[in-house]
Length: 134
Image (tube, rainbow, N blue to C red; front, side, top):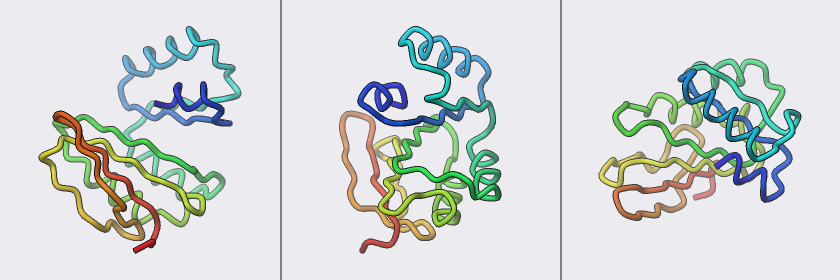
């Protein structure tokens, strides 16, 4: 999704994956698409650890976050971190999009975030969260 966003005019994309194999694949795809290195950041770490460090630095915020963890893992901890660190991590009117298995029930509220809608298609679903908008 980050490469797609960059191709449609996003100023910068941050990619986070704990797998070195996936990092190499992302790097390969970025190079194949001719994305300049200044247009992205690529980090090899677990999502929760990345979020904690980013919240502590308080130097960057994101407008759109697309979070698609492996379906087999419990990722509510990272979702909770987004909610708990929303003020430090999210720009005003930012959107957090969480991809998940359609039968996985995510909470309506997580910290400062409230789900706006859910879109189900096939075995997947997308939950859209924003800060305190209900």
